[in-house]
Length: 356
Length: 145
Length: 125
Image (cartoon, rainbow over all chains, first blue to last red; front, side, top):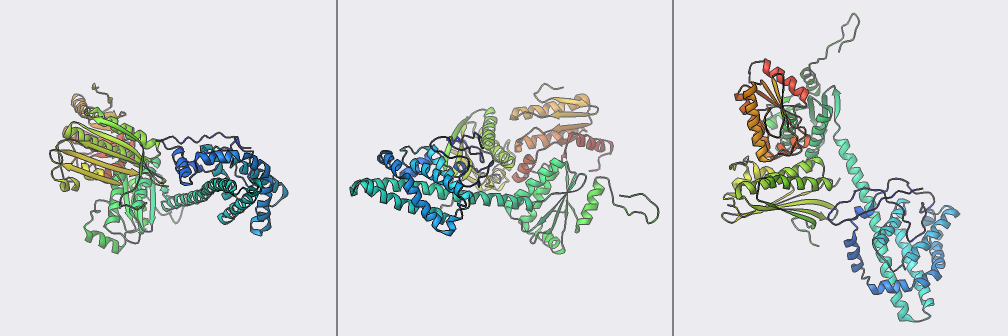
């Protein structure tokens, strides 16, 4: 059971914690800890309010764009009796569609799950008529969307369900207002507005979830692309593979510097055999990194310099003659070892003992 | 919502600091550092912003003796940024091209002042008129990942 | 020991100055003064400036420190700057400032080792 308390404070002028644990709401609805048969992730859950920058300001802007006014709020609140009367039938009608299609049926594998989600659907429906659509309402609707995204329900089904919802509501409204077309029409207009408002939030959570995934992947790619290896005590090696653009060059410098300090490395070997193009920009980035390493009090050895790179660099007039450079990585490692006072020797053919 | 050449943003909070004594350089620097950390810029970005703030507020102090620093927290969609504006009614810069090229040497500054600072930030704008004053605006955006 | 806010200690033939405060220009200038006076007073062979606590080093501070090293050298004292933070190194280099002509080391220990090498071997550079 989750009982975490993580209040989302979207204060003007501050950046709340980027990823925080979103607690279950106790207010309004009777949700328990799972939104659908056991597919809930306890623990970490991204904070969509934060990701979508959904603060008071944004809420007001959205209400305005969906043309939700005080009149709508009053009307929706006054329809609460209608909601109470019809919630079960409408929910049934919705699940008739969901269970009738194999694709959507798959999300409700057993009776217990179905019962639970129908209960929550009722709560959701009643929520539309609360008359109060403050930031907590927004937060709650985001949670609903997030829950659907998490179980893997595709937007097409989610939106299709909303359409059915509206149709069912329309039918019942006509009954409720006993043929008074204009009243029914007004009511439907307000309901449609709040439903679209909710749908937008739901779709936003899908988008936010995908963005989170992309961000995570980008972070992973970054990490993989700068693997600093400890070759020996106080000797680090970074093989740079692939094109080096400005962003990557910045990231390489930062990783190198952080590692040099963390490992107290006396030598940093940068191998560029895997860099396809070494032009003035790349050379400049390498020079800057080397200079920065030197400022820290360590040395850099540049290895993997091919004949064509050597030619290009000198022809371009780039000054890397003051750096340690070698054409092969193995030579660089030997040089690094000698800098720290070690060397590689062969084991003697006869006799015992290890030599290193 | 047309795409412009500069990033469209809103200012979510702002601080203004008057620069009329040497200690103000440190105050600007500290405020920028605090804000950058609060908004979770990484240590390299914090250092870049803080150093740029230090350089530019020192310029105001050294050359104009009086001016203002305005620190804005910016928001552009999902991105967060920090913008700094330094304005003074000092002597202005006579040869802007030279000053930005990095070879411009004046009293206390290194001679790499403006061009160096420019390399620390994402956006750099300068308006200056000899005898009227100088206004420099810089912006740095937090990396997305 | 000088009167400024930056303590300067003597460890054998070496002076150790640890900078732990946010630096006002006047403080940096005073520091330079104090250090040179201490060198004169104690005939120290080496100077170590520990900047591991400095989060921001702008061009003025960088230049003053580098100049201090040069001035000390004229007086026969070798200077090593230790503990520079990664973000500080990156920023200086990105600005285009490479702090030439001064020794640096990763830590105080490394700095003292380097001092030993420099002060026992005659100037070859």
